[in-house]
Length: 120
Image (cartoon, rainbow, N blue to C red; front, side, top):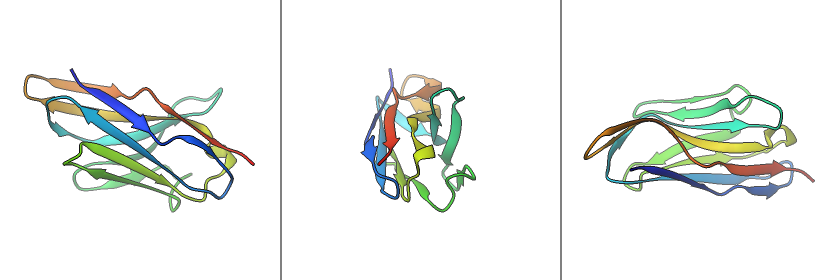
């Protein structure tokens, strides 16, 4: 069994910063790619950023403000969010498209979500 656990959400003022973390637990050999999605109230879930072994991609709305990175040894992906805006308010979800373990491969796994609120 594998599990993705997120942390780092909270309340921040406009212009502030937060860093989200997502750690994968289990007998994991490889995870690729990893991504962050978000879902604002009344809206569909949207891709925020994705990281593979060779590249990163961002939604236009966060380019230049958010940075995705990963620590393979710690099985952790991060989302550094700077210059936050009220429209960034959402539940942020970690996603792993493919997780290879010692016994099987898992597809499209999600974390439980962490709430980010940007408000003064």
